[in-house]
Structure formats: structure tokens, C-alpha cells
Length: 327
Image (cartoon, rainbow, N blue to C red; front, side):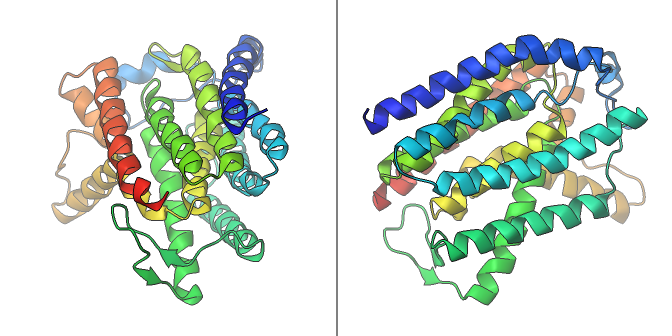
């Protein structure tokens, strides 16, 4: 079976697994009363979403496991390291969701607990990548043919840990509207499929391919009005997948392009908090993260989804042309 066929199989199988599992998982989550609690300081119009089943990210997580089989058939196990990183972050998110559901509140693990676990997961991934010869210290810039700098290990590892933790939490912030994080991450996964194929890393390509299909199946239930939310289980898994693939393909700086929405969401939160403290109570945005600002400006959830996903798609196209020079 050809490499392209295996990648297509990964997408289709991922979609089927996610779509079918939703038929069983959503009723099970309802039976377990695993409903979403709404932020006390969040938009009041989101109160109607309280009780919607959460932890639905298990659907596309299950779909992504297909890449273990398809990647192995193609004789590549590098994608397993990326999958492992995403799974560990997904487990952290699951623990957070579990505490929220059990205690019926919007706060799960403490920020210190989550940060400690995320730092350990990031460091373990980088060490594993290093000792398996899958971590490059050559810094590549999209649209530039040759690496611009070989970064010393002592500098690269701490910076990489910072990027991983930052990216994962940025994806988590994006998960604030129906289908937003899953919709935005879909073109990012498509980019990584095409980039991996261009680099002839067909085994690695099976992971984003399976996840792309899984996100498609998940969106059947998560698009507005959502029947299920991914929870931190799903959003942290997606963050791990995005940043793990960037490092596995030696292109962490491409996150500045494909992750434009994640970055905007994070910056809006930082600006809001900083401005609030500096002005003793004034707000820069009507509400942060920025998707809530646009809601308060009168944008519908579908309009925000369309604009954010459209912008991501455009930046992924630009990123693809930026990395084609490396093929």
C-alpha cells in the first residue's frame, strides 16, 4: 500500500472512529453527569450551555490512535513520540476535567499543579526526542532556504519547553466557543500532513492525518450549537499535537504562522490583564479572550468561527509556501 493511500486511510478511519464513538460517548457522559460548568466571570449568555457534556475530546483522541498502526506500517515510529506528548497533555486535561465534574465547579487542578505537570511533560518529550536523534538544534525560518543558526543545547531546551507550554495553553484558551478550537486546529493539521509529505516524512504524516479526520467527526457534534465540548482533555491534547508536530518536523517557528489565532487569543488575555492592573480596573477589550470581545460586539458564534478558521486557513497556506523551500 502506498504512502498516500495510508495517509488517506488515516483521515477516513479517524473520521469514522470519531463520528461513531460520539454516538456512544455523549450519552455515556450525560449518564455520568459529566456536564460543563460555566465560568462565573464568563459571558452571561453562555449560561444556557451549562450541563453540556464535556471531555468529548476523547473522540478525536481515540481517532488519533490509528496513526500507531498506519505509521508502523510505513516503518516510522517518530509520530509515537508526538502522540505520547499529546496523550500526556490530554491526561493532564482529563484530570482537570475530572475534578471540575466531580466538584461541580469551573476550577479543576490548581495553576501550580497544571504548570508543574506541563513542564515535566515538555521536558520528557524533548529528552526523548534528543536521545532518539529526532531533535534538531538548527533554527529554520520559513521562506529562508538554509538554517540560520545552530542553537546551543543549553539555550534550545529551555526555550523549547517555554514554547511547548505556551502553545498548549494558547490552544486551551481558544476553546471558548462551539467548534472554535476544533475548527481552527483542522487546517493546522492539514498543513502538517502536507508539510510532512513534502519532507517525505510519511510516517509522521499519519498522525495529523488521523487527527484531522477525528476533528472532522468531532465537529459533527461540536459545531454550533454544540452537543458536546472537548474539555481540557481535548484542548490540551490538541495543543500537544500541534507543538509536538512542529518540533518533530524541525519547524517550531512555523507556529507563528499556523498558530496565529492561538497567539491572538493569548495576547488578548495578556493585554486585558495587564491593562486592568495598570489602570486599576479598566478593560482594554470588552471581554477576553478576544472571541468573547467579538461576541460582545454583536458577532454570532458562527461568524467568529468562520473568520477565525478562515484566517487560520490563509496563514496555513502562506506557511506551506514558506516551508516548501525545504522540500
